[in-house]
Length: 132
Image 1 (cartoon, rainbow, N blue to C red):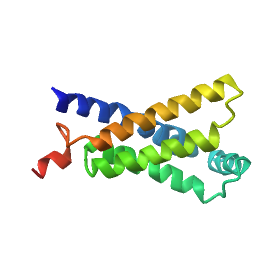
Image 2 (tube, helix red, strand yellow; image 1 turned 45 degrees about the vertical axis):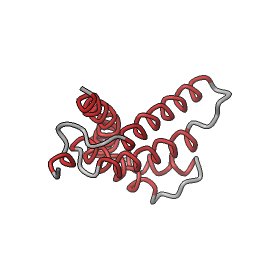
Image 3 (tube, helix red, strand yellow; image 1 turned 90 degrees about the vertical axis):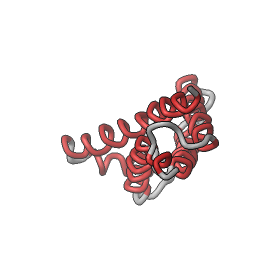
Image 4 (cartoon, helix red, strand yellow; image 1 turned 180 degrees about the vertical axis):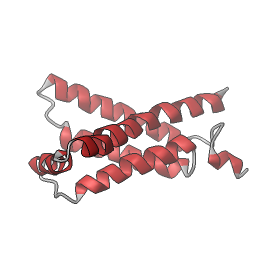
């Protein structure tokens, strides 16, 4: 039963960044030509250079697809956990604002879930499990 819970956890955590990566970045860039430039400007508000935009999109999409498929699960879960922690600390650090505090706590919760996935053995229905 535990291996199936791990599978469900892997899918639920992967879908967060898969949807954000494809809808918020890819789809929006196609339908709104200025979206990508606006995204880079938004990152600049937080002191991040424009090169972070493609890196963040790459991490979201690649990490979530790898996690969804269960290939290099530990590595992809650790990558997304680090990314979630980065998002929480850089974009949602204004804890005086209740909405920002809630967003920070949500990203920290996702980080915890990803660390749990990284710490467990290969789950059911994963490409990692096929090697055994």
